[in-house]
Image (cartoon, rainbow, N blue to C red; front, side, top):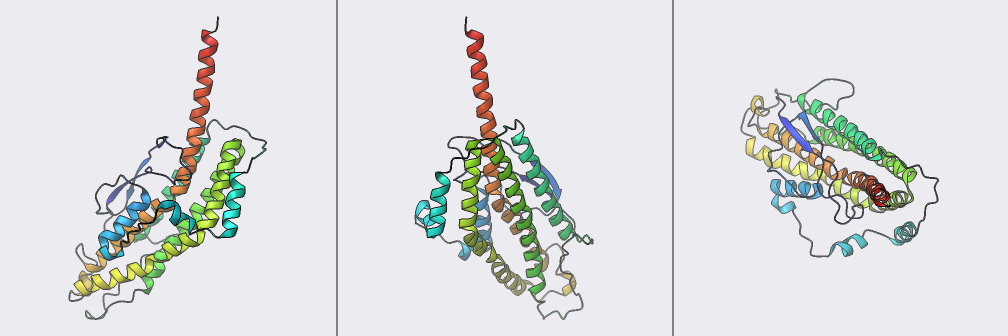
Length: 295
């Protein structure tokens, strides 16, 4: 299969507990990567909702609406120990020492883009069929399989989970590095980093459960597409309109949407760092203006 160009934009609404009210997204980075087109309309909402909308577009029954308010739903995810830890974090007053980093926003942005670009390249190489020790290989198709026999889903499940593990490892380390930068910069950002650590721990079980449901969803799609294309010869399954080719495209779309969703807390930390440096620059400008107008 040939690679199609895709443009990925970092932005959108970041995690609610990390964003400052009224503060715009501080940066947008676009990258061209040789990957499949996602086949979805332009999306301007939160990255998490992009994943939900993609799941719903592939299977309307997968979309579930919740009428509970955000605070109520969030509260259900925290047990007593998490609540105590959160209360402690909100009262945390870091003492430093702190060393303000004027380029903290650029440093975090560069780290994020490097990590993200590596993950996107890994995805691109996988779906392009590149063979290398570092590449998670797309399961090969046995074209000698009988036309009426459905190939097993297991290899595709392992392929998908391998990419999930790769994302988790890369983004977890990136988030830790971002918090270390924030802790060293100022008391305000150090406090935010403490809150982020509590939220990461408190929501870890919920996040793991949500994303671990993806293979079951994919297996259902696998069976549906097989039912639609089972009467075609195996040689056509990976053709442009083949059922297995479509399934591979859906895996890739979902992995891209999952990457966007998983990086949201990190984007929130980056946005907070950018806001802190902007506020500092504004204060310095105000001081300079006052000094220049003082007789």
